[in-house]
Image 1 (cartoon, each protein chain N blue to C red):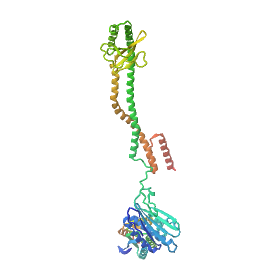
Image 2 (image 1 turned 90 degrees about the vertical axis):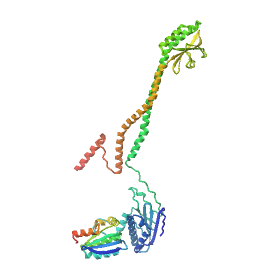
Image 3 (image 1 turned 45 degrees about the vertical axis):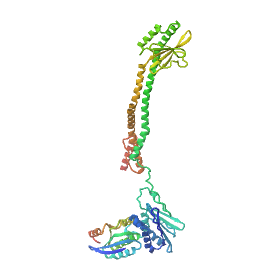
Image 4 (image 1 turned 30 degrees about the vertical axis):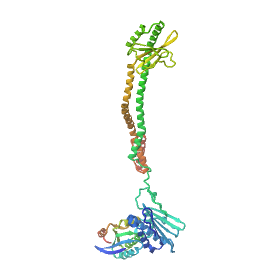
Length: 115
Length: 423
C-alpha cells in the first residue's frame, strides 16, 4: 500500500494505492487521522485501491468520525467496482459522501464550501 | 500445500498455519499461489480474499482465547464454483449466527466498529454452512463462478472434504405457461388422434351405406324378376308335361313356341329353355339356345320352383312331372342384362365416386370439427394461461365478458374495490 498526499485548488487529497486490509490498515489509519484535524476537507482518492477489507472499512469509519468531531468533511472518490461492492454491502455507501472521481469530489467541495 | 494441476478433476489447495493475526500476509500469499486470482472473475476473487481475511483474523483473535492453535484453510475448485473451507479447533463458534446483523442505517457516529467482517462474509458468499465436528469448527462458503438461473439453489456444489463436481441441472420444468410449440403439439395430436379417425370413419360409412343400398336394390330387382318369371315357368312346364303325356315331340308343340314368341316381346329378349333328364343332362334345347349359362341342376332339396343367378341371366327351374313321375327339369333362362345393368352401373358409380367422396368429405368433416374446436381451445388456453400466471405470481385479468359466472365474479370484485376505496 502507498499513500500520496497533495493539494488541488486548496483541497487536500490523499491518494491511496494497493490494498487496505488487516495488514496495512494501521498505516492508513495513522495517515488519515493525522491529516483530518488540519484541513477543512479531505478527499480520499481510492481509484488505485483494488481491495478493502473490514479493517479498511474501519479506517474509513474512524476517519469519518474524526472529521465529524473536528467539523471537517471526508469525501471518497474513484471507487473501483469491487471496492464499491464492499462499501455497498456494509451500508457505508449510504452514510459517506462518495464521488465518481477526484475532480468531481473537488468540484463538489468547492461548490458547497470546504467547511 | 498440495497442488493438482489436472484441470479435469476438481482442484484442492490446503493451508495449515498457526492462528495468529500477523500471519495474514502468509494467507494472502497462499491464496495468490493457488493461481485462482488469475483465472476466476475479479469480483469473485475479491470476495474470497475478503472472506479469507475476515475469517482468518476473526479466528486468530477469538478462537483460542489467547492460547495457541491451528487454522486450516482449503480452497476447492469445481466447474461452477469455488468453495472455501475454514477449520479451527477452538471453542464452538458459528459465525453465521454470531450476533444480530449490524444496523447499517445508523449515523456514522453511532456505528459500532466490529461485527462488520462476519456480516460481509455472510453477504458476499452464495452459500454458507457451519458444522461442529468433534472439537472442530468448520465453516464452508461457496462462491459461484458461473451465473446460475434463479431457483437452482440446490445445484451449488456440496462442499465436502472430497467434492464431486455436481452435473449442472437443467432449468427445472415445474409450472410454466405452455409455449406456442407445446400448444400446437397438443392441438395437432388431438387432430391426429381424434378428428382424423372420426372423419375417416364417417367417410367410410358414407361409402359403405351407398354400396349397401345398391345391394338391396339388386336384391329387390331379383325378387321382382323371380315373381315375374314364375308364371311363365309354370305355364311352360304345364304345356311341356301335357305334350309329353300325349307322346308329342316338343318341337311340334305350338303352345311352347307361342310362349317363347310372347316372351320376346314381354321381356328383354327371347326366353331360352332347356329340358334335362333327372341326371341333369340336356335332352332338349330351344332354337338358338346355345349353351346353358350355368349348371342346370336344382339346388339341393329343391322340389318345386327354383331360381339361380347367372352373370347376365336369371334362371328359373321347374321339375317336369308326368303321371306322378319326375321325368326331368325345365330350366328357363331369362335374359336380364338390362335389369341388372342398372345396379351394375350403380355399383360402378359408387366405386368410382368413392375417392371423390373421400376427398371432399374428409376435409369438410375435419374443417367442421376444427371450427368447433378452435373457440374451445382458445378458452381453455386462456384459463390455462391464467392458472400458470397465478402460479408464477403474475396477475392477468380474467376476461369479464365470458359467461354469467365470470361476469358475476367481476361485478363482485368491482363492488369490493369500491367499498375498499371508500373506507
